[in-house]
Structure formats: C-alpha cells, structure tokens
Image 1 (tube, rainbow, N blue to C red):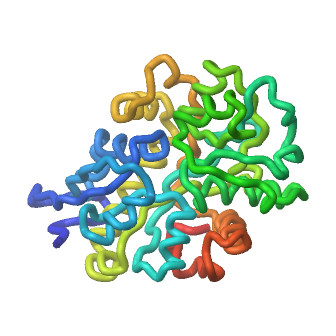
Image 2 (cartoon, rainbow, N blue to C red; image 1 turned 90 degrees about the vertical axis):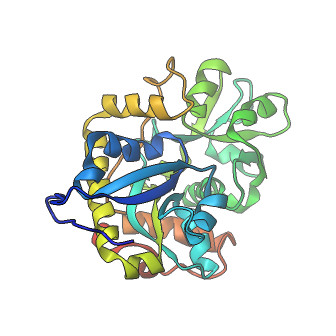
Image 3 (cartoon, rainbow, N blue to C red; image 1 turned 135 degrees about the vertical axis):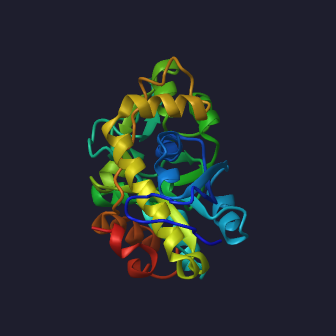
Amino acid sequence: MALTACGGDGGNSEGELTEVSVGAMPIADTGPLWLGVEKGFYEQEGLDLEVIETTGGAVQVPGVLAGEYDFAFANIVTGMVAHDQGLPVEYIINGSSVTGDPDEDVAAVLVPADSPIQSIEDLEGTTMTSNNLNNVGDTAIRAAMDLNGYEGASAEFIELAFGEAMSVAEQGQVDAVLLVEPYKTIALQQHDARIIMHPYTETHENFDIGGLLATHELIEGDPELVEAFQRATARAMEYAQENPEELREVILANTTIEEDIIDDITLPTFRPEFDREAVQVIADAAHQHGVVSDPIDLDELLPEEYTR
C-alpha cells in the first residue's frame, strides 16, 4: 500500500484516502478506534480505516500475519507469546491501560457472596477461571499474588468464557473467576459477587493491557503509513481520555454492552505510550511462570517513540 499524502497536519491535498484495516475485539479497550473514525482523525491523516471485529489474540496475530488486516489490537501477553515464538510482529503504539486505582479497575477477581475467600492470601491453592490460559489474565493474577508475598504458582486455572464464569463459581465448580468489563459490572449487579482483587493494578499501577501490533514487513516497508496510523490513534486515545461520555456512546454503538450498564462500567486509561517498567513486570512474570520460554527483549517488542 502506498500512502498518497500524509503529513504532520494530516491533510491530503488530493483528497485520496488509503484503505487500512485493524482487527479488534468489540470491547471498551478498543473504543478509541471507533471514536477516531467518527471524529475524522484517521481521515485527516489520509487513511480510510475499517475496524474488523475479531474474537481475541488467537486470531488477531495470525490475521495480521496473513494480511487479513494491517494492524491488530492484542493484549500485552499475546504479543509476548508471539515474540517468543519468533513471529515477525511488534507493537507500534499502546492501546489501553489500567485506571491506577486499586479499588476500581477494568479487571477483577471475584467470588460468590458466600465464598470463604476474603483476600488475595486466600487465593493460594485455589482454582480460578480465565478466558484464555497462559495469557494476560492468569499471568497477571499469578504476578499479583507473587508481588504480595503469596505463591502465584499454587493457583490453577481453567479456560472459561467470561459470560459463563460466575454461574460456574456459584455452582461451586471453581473458587474464583477473572472478569473484565462489562462482565465485572454484570457480576456485581446481577450475581451479588464480591471483588477480591484487581490483578492488573496489583501487578503495576501503570499496567498496560494491550496495544496495536503490525508486522515487521509493514513497519519497514511502509513507515509513512504506520506513522500516519500512529498519529491518528494517538489523537483518538487522547480524545477518548478527555471525553469519556462520547467514548461511552461509541462503545454502546459498537459492542454488545447493554445500555442499562454502559454508565456503570469502569473505563480503561488511554495513553499512547507504553510504561516500560510496567511491561517489564508482566514480562518477568510470563517468563517465571512458563508462559514464554525465554526472557522478553522489550527493545524488540515495544516502539521506542511510544514507550516511556
């Protein structure tokens, strides 16, 4: 693909747009992409962006490698696993981060109201659910337990969709569940669940949940297109952070989140830059717990210009 005209002001004198696509799950974390399209940020950079709905990391990385889309939103551990496997992808910009509030975050470990589990200490030796195994959720829980002085390796995980997890816990088949928004809010409102901890924020107050990936071929072969996408996405993230009500509206329009809870869900923090220290903590945990076979070289995974 050739970018016809793209500069710092985002203008395109000929009015021609380059078609680009991004694979992304329809969740709150990817809301800035839709908001950026709606506000014209991508068009101002000469891009006609299509957001293609995906189901998760299992298809996002293969999809971007196969050329099904140019960029993909993937959680931070998915990118690490891809890097560990020698796949030629890397992050080009951050996507979403935690709130930094230990009492209110986008992901939580919850239990039924009558559970004997009262604190992170009680999670040792328990069985929990995660929507994907050896990924960001279970890795963050193990890391948070380790950092608080408990044995993260003692916890066991079973793979279960977010929408099914709370009912399984209420039946006594698992001890605790990992839920992200909107499932966290649904569990609190409809299942009388209790929050035990927020594993992402417990791991690091600036925990980066996920970012936008591209292949080495695209990054090296069409740097102008990549830079245009980065600029537009950075503007979209900054706008989303400053205008949460508009963000909630675009999330409602592009996801299955119900209108009656859209105002109650916790939104991530949006900033273009990765926090290197925070990413290193989860990278170390991924290696310690066997999610990746070798230590992750963050210089090869994160974009220098969008890492602080």
